[in-house]
Length: 538
Ligand code: F6P
Image 1 (cartoon, protein in one colour):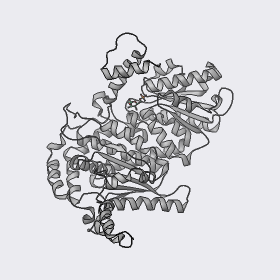
Image 2 (tube, rainbow, N blue to C red; image 1 turned 120 degrees about the vertical axis):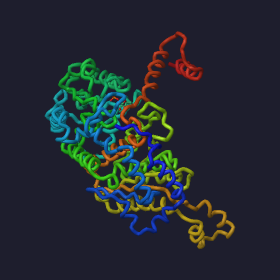
Image 3 (cartoon, rainbow, N blue to C red; image 1 turned 180 degrees about the vertical axis):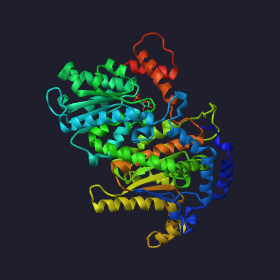
Image 4 (cartoon, protein in one colour; image 1 turned 60 degrees about the vertical axis):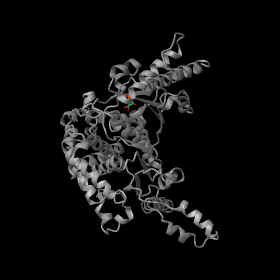
């Protein structure tokens, strides 16, 4: 991949100048153009992506696409899909797209299809009851033990596809918090529970501790012999899994060319395939593959991941916006913001460029969100009337899965009303007119006006999708994955490593050993004080 400081490009310089001309223009003014909504909308398969409520005009879009061209996004896409080691600091290719593609990645094809076959066979056996627990009973509960990418993707998808779920109950244990582990085990019958331990490295402290505790609890109930029927693992580290006491027949493989936060498409998604069945899992892969093809082949000015990424760069680097909200108008996607927090912030939260130099511009955005309408009653006040500019993605589905029109109408009315309100706001004159009928005195009315004014001009992208299906969900997640990639290319950073999580892990080991030592500790005064306070009761 090329190594270009984006701020040195002609497009960046032009965007800087252009920003000065458009920064104060209100979206209401931009909407005087009758064709704006259709000009800034992409329709693709069952997706309608309306980005007309953004503070851009045709020139902005042109310059942003110029920027993508100047940083050689096309070449970078070819490197990404071509299996080049674009995760340079770890010397790895980034090939999660090969997991959802039947033909193109010849080198990975055989391994991927073998792995998929293993997932298919196993999930079929568990769901059908052919695979029994050690005492001959059918499996009723699946517990996924993993953290980060080995938890967030699977839990997000299982929650999102609840409607498609079979009879298996699914639980997720992630945090090393022992209370979380014990609460998660409450009510479980070891005879009918399958534990799926997911760790790409099989060295992660949280997952290994949780798995050890759970295994101990299990052995206390059913004995060592029963482990083989109730424990499977997903990992690249076969030796460590075997040392943990899981037989090689019960190990599902993955590869170093699949990053943890992009791994739900691999056997890391075993709990997804168990929860919704292999066919739905496969449909999700197909949906993601369709988005991969769109991303690879469609010109940048009509390309959903490219346009959404460039819009994010526009606000992050020119308007100085620090965060972005993701608001799904469906409860099914309630874990999407949490999943995206890892995907986006672990990928693009970097301050060193691909040269190893400190960047002199902003990179990764902060991601947060909650489902609408809950979020309206929580933090929308700040988005509407606060001092910060927060571009937001609004995601919704035309059809409700349970078909309750009354609820769906209300949900979607709120969705559309919010983006309209964020865009238009409400002027002092409009507030004044509204107050005309009120019984307040003229003075009281005048005093109230400034508090009831909405500046508007708050940008949103609307992602309106026909229906929440495994395939449309796959496309949506793949869209965000590619958006992350595009942003990393523009910012000239490495999106696929995560060195920033290492220091805390190292120090946690040191602190843990200091809990059990009486010798002098080597910490700052604050940390030492905290350790001593903890030790005084433990
Ligand atoms: O948080 C750091 C990280 O390495 C993530 O990137 C990864 O998803 C998570 O830990 C879990 O790692 P593993 O699957 O190896 O247990």
